[in-house]
Length: 280
Length: 270
Image (cartoon, rainbow over all chains, first blue to last red; front, side, top):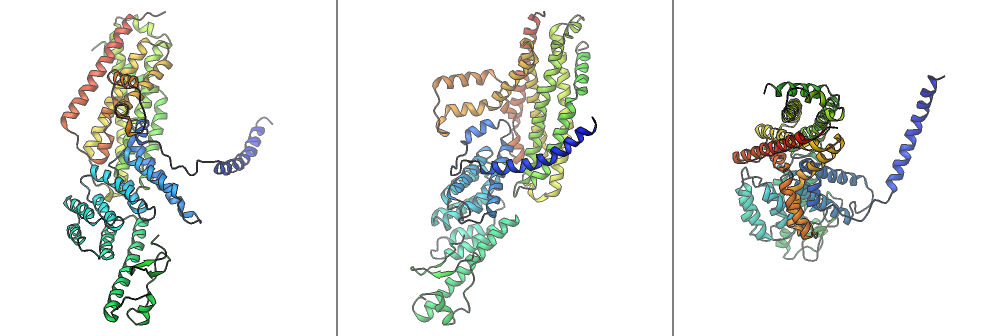
């Protein structure tokens, strides 16, 4: 009896333990978690708290950001990532780069997501500026800065400066210098953006990021195609097309390409090609 | 030296026999194994993270060794009164302290060497799996960082001798050592923070600034020996920096041991 009793008790308690654990874990998920606050401890405090382990603390904060971002892909609601969550995402990447300003991955993730989806281009550029200052051997960060200035902020002169800086660094792609001069030609925005994206894509080997940039590139190529068609239409009929269907009706193009983001292309009031998905 | 050596050897053997060593080794092994797992989650700088993990593991495990094995070796003689047997022999108290300290230095050197082998293996394995992600990798810098970690651990254990020379129980020594370690690792950042508090958006009273500046000279500046970031990114370290850092470690260690033996010589045992 004395030998059996503990075994019986253990066998009895193990399933109870498992079921209670799942109950508690479920309840824990429902606890208020400070939703709506994007607060991350100030970086200097984090640096002090991480003692001599700031390198690993930087890796940890970065992985935390990455895990959070990955988890948002399971969400059904739109927008997938809320405003305050973008802020938090930026803050934690900023903290990670404060702990180890030489760490490339946070900059890389910020460039891939904060700009296109998060609408935080100025903040991303501030982050990249820091990275570019510390990683003075790396041409990729000033190249990203150049792209953001050119494509999102529409500051071509500034973009040229960044690209020149990038082209001077070791192993820089030879295309950068010529791209920098090309930016002087106004009105070739989409074409230059395609060149930019192809360059970013060639330096990307992480599968998910690659896919993201590929989709983006395809969308931009479709827009470029439509823009060129609209110019051809203008030349042939001496007036701009009012809607995209005009071009298929007059056989300028055979069909309107599909937006890889699931939206529909249209011609905006100023004559530029836009899409309802806004490339997100 | 002939008097010191037997004490050093006895201390070393006692430390190696201590079961805590097994626990520390298992912990280190697990962390280094985790290196492979975590590195697989990184997109670009896998090499940096692998080196971070390996060096931090060595540093943390060494810290555990100093705190839980090193302090015990010194304090056990006092706690269990076995020190009466030693002091009745023809050796002076400073000789006893220095002999014990040498034994612990030997213990630290051995443990760090074993850990380094594991660390090198784990980095090597990650490097084999992701050969394209080690752009600025340098073995010499990693070995230099490990040597610096060793120096800082030796310095810290010299401090434990200083604290053990006047405290009555090993627990007090442990607490004082942990406090000095935390202060030593962060004092440079704290000093920078209180001297320019607007960076973090906080206010600091002038008294705090003075206290921190005083602490800066009293406590060991352990962050001098923290070159893990430089090692992880292959950033250059000048020869003169190595020279000054090593000198700082030697001078502070010598000071701590000398003060410890002075206090210990005057100490009365009940």
